[in-house]
Image: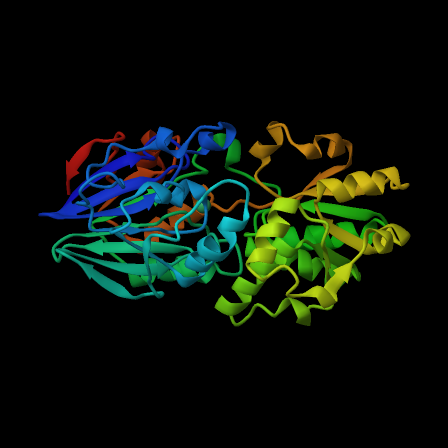
Length: 414
Ligand SMILES: [Zn+2]
């Protein structure tokens, strides 16, 4: 088997990996580099030098496997030749098919040949087999186990061990034990992110509950609607503090997808603490109306006047227009809960003016060093290959085992 990491040997995000055996070529993830979020360039600027992948070429890539719902793992998909099969979990397919097109920009994968792969299902692609292994990181995130019958590679995608889904990541160590190669992410193997104030999702939920119980103020929250664990933490904190959580129709539509995919996620209409504010951006509203999903939960509607009458009763998912209106109509004191990666705070955003009210409550989507060390001890690979890290040369020391350090675009026989 051969490996070529097109992108990700020396950066966090943008993973694109090729594994091949004879004439069989498969890709693991097809992501955009993180820097693309700050640039306004066409997708084609971020192409990897992978032959037989793009729409204008004879397709020679046999399949692409996507690990999860973050653009640094799937963002290049619109450029591929549509005859190449793309495999992903059902939840990820639903998110990309139903939700992604609603957002600004022109992400379109409706023309692609997408196949859903179930947890622990194995598919045969030419001379390789690929098994999906669920992990804790994002909703329905998957690692993959790739074999040519002689050698076995485990690609972790992104993973962590500190939400209520952590059992999935530990199960990966048991179900895919003793691989020849562990292609493992190392996002937090850099000093800056090694330690966090809130080590687990439960700690995040508790901190939010304490804040809401102890302050009699309106709270804004900014977090990703696609971060199901975080949404559940906010809902739990709202129940524990008697608050109402006001979300937007897009977030409600995402919750419908999670409800369809996971038995433990209730229908939005069943959650008495949730209301929906419909003053969302016009372009998203129009796209959702066209898709017939804008008013799915109309019974939950709340007006800005209702919020202004008793602001201390609410937690509001951040909405620029609503925040401006409330400030003009007498709101002066409030909390602004920031619940995303700290690094985004350094970028300019409409929430900059709320920095004086900021309370950061977040835990990483990525494993810390000690959890990765325990994971390596349990899965027992013969060799580690670093990816999704800025510290590939530290792996050997940290994990005390043979490490294959690669450069982008380097081809290596495994
Ligand atoms: Zn991720």
